Image (tube, rainbow, N blue to C red):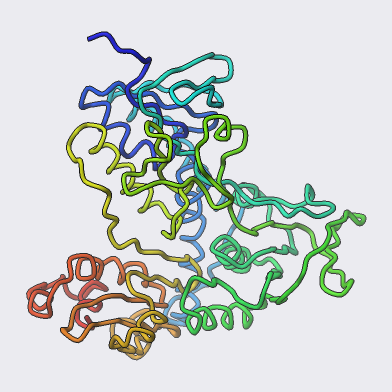
Length: 444
């Protein structure tokens, strides 16, 4: 068969929205190309999830040691330099591993930045024109930068995770996932941390009473929070940095993290030239992840939708496109329940119907004081609560939990929410005991 184009499917970007589906797609005989200007794997493996959770593991251990008190002998302290070295050991081979995964399946990797020439053609730096029948935009998000004087003096999340020596005073602008997780890490490693909020809300997408528990705990540990900070400028002053905020107030710090969010990575892609519709929130797609230009699709964080911008969503969309392009499905995508977690200490995790929605719709909300549940007493968790949402027939619709094991508890309950298991079906699930899974199901 003579192909009209260089590739049947061409992906722009090599993150989870690509490689989870592109590798198995290539194995079906579809000719697949993957364009990437940076590290194969994109944000999550190289400068996001994998790196973050590696840096956080010792934090979790330090916190556990604190709780156990004199049951454990010795004072456990976090060595930040060694922690960053360990992180690098974990992630440094991932691009090579993912490259092998793609190429062994039959996909071709093309290094460079892509710009659309027309809806079937992109121009890649140092390569030239590359054509494809279908093209998938999977370029993800990049850090937002404040548009203020001195913005170049601030750093992003990747810079933080590569800090070999932790500054004594760190100021974090923003209180979303990145701001709160890194505030937790820096505080545990001994830094003086200040968090400057745009408004008066921290982690606005999570259940606020649980967020308050986490914030209050950090305050007790010395983290300072400045609400409605209205940051106006950064300036170098001797060996420090001055932040101007509020009503002409100033703050001196040793290091600034701009954690004011992430924005779609669409610069210099040429979408206007080919008429693909997008805005500051991402690319518009239909129920087939198809843009308004018939042969162009988008997947992952770069898509404009209401889903959490998390790896599980990108993974599922990538797998869906693999099935669509290989002819295994002709149906529109049906997204599963997408969970979310913020890796503070303790964590806050959620899935399904929120507490706020449950109150509006009149669903049953059960409150669980887990700190007094025996399993959470094993490692002396002082902050542990959950809210579970049920309908009148007893189906579990949603859950949110704050605890050091929140992510595992929510993971255990996902099947009940996704498949709308009846109380009788849930009763037949006999998890291993004693485990967090058993504890979670026992409450469901």
